[in-house]
Length: 318
Image (cartoon, rainbow, N blue to C red):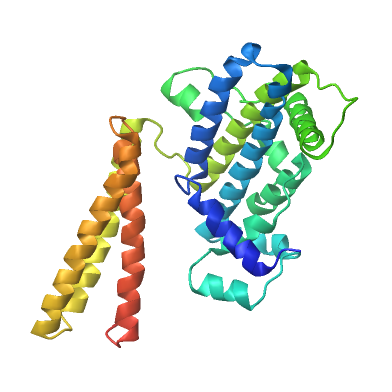
């Protein structure tokens, strides 16, 4: 049986294997790779086709765990709504210590402890956080990019919701059989794999649209708008960093001011260097500014917390 330390280490290791903490970005990268491979499925041996249900369920589990984490860590009202999802989780000193030390977040801990081995599990968890039935909501979700940017009619992403849900459930079933049984007399129908792939991909896209609009209503859609929005968020974070830095320097003696200035300059260099390192995975792409600003803003937010804590710890706040 896993101990809570195993769970904490598992969360940390899982995080280290991702390029980002964005459910949307991780889904885009993983699903686009799978879709390209699926286009060449005719060249694959029948046995290798069985990989697709396994990979699709990994996408379902990975995406929805990360989305649940994002929603809960956003705060109210999702944090309060997540209370019922924590009932079977083991909360002991190791977990409290990891949360206090910011090794893991509340969202990560809860998301890790939620079962996601069938469609009903996903619906239960997301419905609790959304405050309404997820599968019912997905019936009418439309692709904003399609109708706002491309000018297409506003139509639901899922043209046949019931058929989609049935095919996703079948994909979960296939994955279980392939991964956990020898099943020597069981023939996996290629049509089930193909139907499941299309349905699961559309289900994920509809789910991402619903969650995205819930967390960030009317968010920018074009890459240019995303770059502008990311830049504005970084500017706002850096303005707060500088305001706090100015506050601290006003309360220090000249010698300490010089020390602080050197440390702060080193932090700024680190922020810029690390953000560039992360963004350069997309060097030459139009998404580069969004990745750079997002990475830098995350570091700036941590710096804000650090400076606020310094002010509190040394009685400089106020």
